[in-house]
Amino acid sequence: MTTSQNAAPSKPQADPAQEAAFKRELVQLIPHLRAFARTLAGDAASADDLAQDAMLKAWDARASYQMGTNMKAWTFMILRNQFYSEKRRSWRQTQLDQEAAERTLVAVDDPQAPIALDELRLGLAMLPAEQREALVLVGAGGFAYEEAAEICGCAVGTVKSRVSRARKALAVVLEGGDYDRDGRPAGDAMRAILADAERVSTVR
Amino acid sequence: MIEQTYMGQRRRPDPSLDEARLRQQAIGVKLRQMFDQVVNEPVPDEFLDILKRADEKRADRD
Image (cartoon, rainbow over all chains, first blue to last red; front, side, top):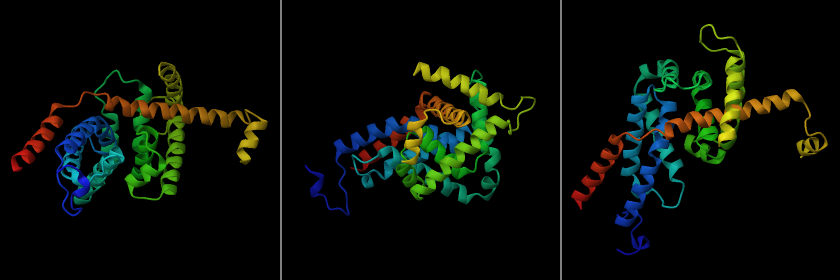
């Protein structure tokens, strides 16, 4: 078996070199899968479960992956499908979605995490799931609208409008202090974010 | 295109628009920071163990 071109399309042959390359690439994507899972799942532990399931699914489906195409988008799509198919199985989880999202996004293991980041997490948790997901993919995951559309299985225009609505809503939430946090004056979060963003962008 | 002409004529058309853009940029920076924070966490060994086991299972079958 020298070239994969000779393989019958219906029965892909496992090329050890290609499999090794696939595995290397998959391993490099683990941190990103974890980060994406963290924005979907109820808490850090179930996010890791989700990321592990997605990683295994991707590994099992490696024969159907075309080397050279966007593996990150491909694995994110697997992870997302996994998340929603699991969710569909459990009505209870669906009910708890909002609550769970707030818990996760708030539950950072780093007590030193700057306030602004906490507020952003809370703000994100308040967005409808499809807006949050679109914003995370485009705004943080580094995906183009077209790629995000493919991952979410919707039209490019839909992703664009979701991202735009998410951005507006997030700004309103952060400026208005319209989140559940006791005693903090409105607008504080936005000020902190602005100050912090300035600091971060000079570092980068 | 209309926007381009507009921007060309007046670099800073409306302070509140400018501020809104600044805020959006700031939110974008934070969003990436939040995501990158998890990306930069060390990957739990479990992940690599699971993948290794899956790979070995395949090797056994061959």
